[in-house]
Length: 80
Image (cartoon, rainbow, N blue to C red):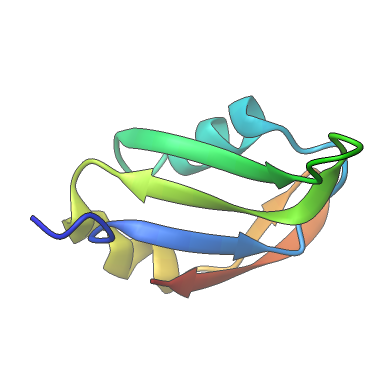
């Protein structure tokens, strides 16, 4: 299996959104194998985007058909 299969880019997330909140939101669609919030290497502050990887890539169609709001912000979802 390709390592990027089942992987989504999640953009526009709130500074308060952490990996647990990201995972919690997307677990509604299927098992999340990884939820990552990208952080600045020097400050450790969130950069406003992250990635979610599903164990089962077949859930991606359903995820992409809906709008997503996490921590009261509408986020952008892109299939990688």
